[in-house]
Image 1: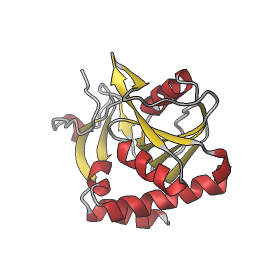
Image 2: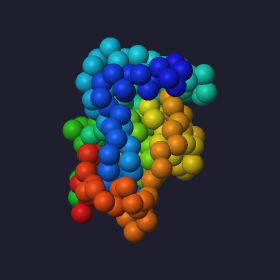
Image 3: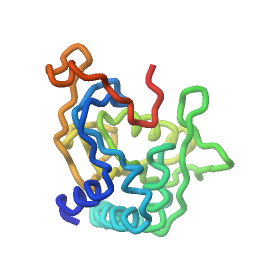
Image 4: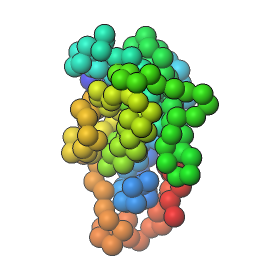
Amino acid sequence: MKQEEVLTHFRETSALLEGHFLLSSGLHSDRYLQCAKVLMYPDRAAALCKALAQKVVDTIGKNRIDYVVSPAMGGVVVGYEMARQLGVPGMFTERENGEFTLRRGFELPTGARVVMSEDIVTTGKSSKECIAAIKAAGGEVIAATCLIDRSNGTADVGVPLISLMQMDVKTYNPDDLPPELASTPAVKPGSRNIA
């Protein structure tokens, strides 16, 4: 799937937002991708994840993957659909006492080869937290995936990161906002609670 096709899915579902946004990383941005809005359409979720799953297979091979694990909340739909497309079981981590962990009876066999999948990567913080939880549960993370890599390839999650699309979306520290953002209140559209 070409990058313009990916963006078309986001534009047609009003999932590409413009304004002043406070990201879960604490950084500010003038654009925000609300994956939940594009993923609410099963046909679009299937098409996007099918293309991403093909990139994973082309990069690391299908027979090397035992499980897909995603971080809740943003990664649940992507993780489920990636697992379905790859033909392996999928599960998700949840926050407990502020840290990701496997719950609901989910278990990974020691040494299970895992692909961590989520919707968006900006700084890689959630990915790294999810990867740490997978390792703590005994899994071996062989790659991470996301639909959109907002870091344009600069985020380091500690394993190869395979994205359907990379974007160069500028982010700003709170004390270094351009005038057009500084003059408008920030909206917190993400799923992580920011203090």
